[in-house]
Image (cartoon, rainbow, N blue to C red; front, side, top):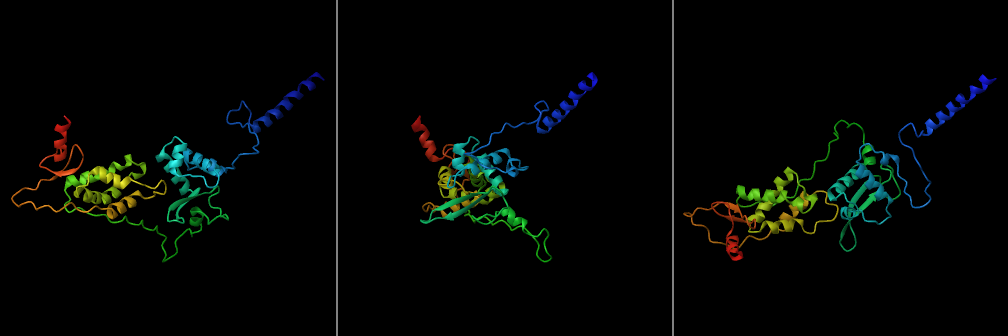
Length: 296
């Protein structure tokens, strides 16, 4: 009788331990949840976003924030940078991630009055068609045939070439180098103006044409970076090329040609104001040489 009674408790304890293991035993390690049901002020987020295998943690968090916002809220880079501490460059990269995976759609539209605004659509389930618009790009791509048919190769459309830029009359190495240095430094004014080597090579002659017309590097930088759109700057090199061509200043007043007997000095970059000037060797331009004794 005593042995029979003592053998019962271990079987009962074993079943309880098994149930606790299935629900997450506090001593088994891993995650447990202490959940309370939300009744107000909550947003439903799919696990396809919360556990996305390719999105960065910043992109996932930014998507959750955007999906929790009301209709009409501003989600441009400037507004998000003011709200969070990650900075414009990281936030812009996270927005591009969400756009590439179909969680965001952005399009520029002209509103009454001629102003251009950017419409942003947040998609909580990429690939699903809703009553508010067409299906996002991932759904459109999945509808294409998996293999190209004979005679119709499925090739990627070539990228539209950049607008033409003006060229200087004399492509002196110092002038071209000054133009390249100016373009490489534009990212200090706006991180979105980080240019590739190919884009910089295309734009450098346009900047050199401005410098050749006695425009200071500071004035060129101001013309290229002023009034940039707060969002929607998808290809900054195209905008810079357009400005270099459309806003090209007139040439300086006519000057008497240099006599053939007088050597024409190469272009140098002033150590004081960074303006291009002609001299036999590097140094300061005439205005800066006059200003230094005066300041002293």
